[in-house]
Length: 92
Image 1 (tube, rainbow, N blue to C red):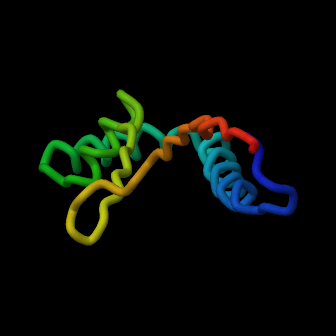
Image 2 (spheres, helix red, strand yellow):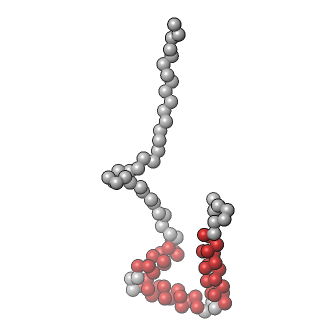
Image 3 (tube, one colour):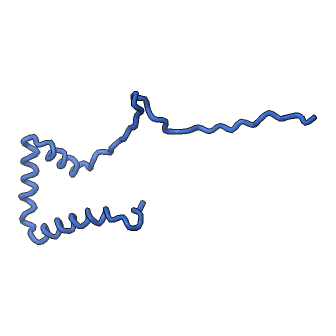
């Protein structure tokens, strides 16, 4: 599904992506140091680094959103419609 016309959110993210890719293409020797820094941070238990490594290897986890009422009961997520034929009337 494409974003609505005029939505510039994707462009903002692409600008950063493009700038980062350009910097790494121009200086490819920097990438191994970045990877090593990330792995070292993960090894010492930095949660953000562990998450990044897992996300890069396995992909991001699927996020499940469950909405509840204030009392914790599930919010109605479906409506069932039943059509009932009215009783036949006798015209007198």
